[in-house]
Amino acid sequence: RKEVEQDPGPFNVPEGATVAFNCTYSNSASQSFFWYRQDCRKEPKLLMSVYSSGNEDGRFTAQLNRASQYISLLIRDSKLSDSATYLCVVNSRDDKIIFGKGTRLHILP
Amino acid sequence: EAQVTQNPRYLITVTGKKLTVTCSQNMNHEYMSWYRQDPGLGLRQIYYSMNVEVTDKGDVPEGYKVSRKEKRNFPLILESPSPNQTSLYFCASSLWSDGQPNYGYTFGSGTRLTVV
Image (cartoon, rainbow over all chains, first blue to last red; front, side):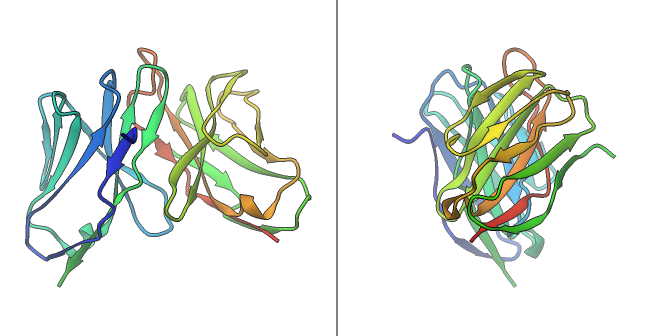
């Protein structure tokens, strides 16, 4: 099993729809989890941290499922500007930070 | 403004000509790291540093050197660049706590390097 795995997509969804994608991780000792957003040829930017209790920021909801070892990102009422690649990031206890390869999202008008 | 500054943004060079990509952060972050990003391969860590004078190899360190003489600076050195080092490079920094960079990265804007 890969250390961090994401469906590469692309996910093509109409504007206004709800979309969700998951990221699985292999190291059960992983401690910190993040979602990043990356626009084409630009630097990744922190979207949100993922807490054990789940967290919400406007239209975005992130959740952690430790038992099944995955994190999820839900985007409600999607906007054209949400089109990007979404990277999940997992920090392990041994100083290792692992990026997923990203899920591409296209919001269609 | 809190930021990570990389220079240059674009660089075309010839095989074997030593080059340095600079990275500087103004957030007093302990942890700094270099990544390269290639299509289909995602972000791969080259080197990282947990503090001044402390550096360690990431997943793809061959052909690269780094140094951390000051907390704010973390230059990436290619002593003898080769075409397979053509890539998009990112520097990133983070606070360090509880044994890991816990608060997420701030990335520089990237350096697009072409080695011919």
